[in-house]
Length: 65
Image 1 (tube, rainbow, N blue to C red):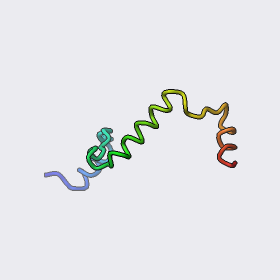
Image 2 (cartoon, one colour; image 1 turned 180 degrees about the vertical axis):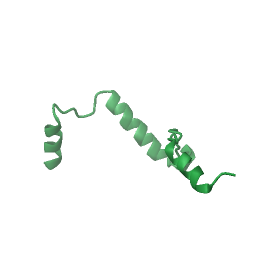
Image 3 (cartoon, rainbow, N blue to C red; image 1 turned 90 degrees about the vertical axis):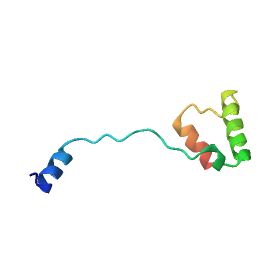
């Protein structure tokens, strides 16, 4: 018969891998206008309408303005 402490020790010595699968709420939970706005923002960035910075310091300087 196994002891509970032995089982815990053996269990804790192994790495337990969790599933890295992301779980998201169904799309029906979101407002359709919100989804359209996000899709438009993504398309704007793909079309080159996003702001590009030469360095991280330039990015932070733009936030300070």
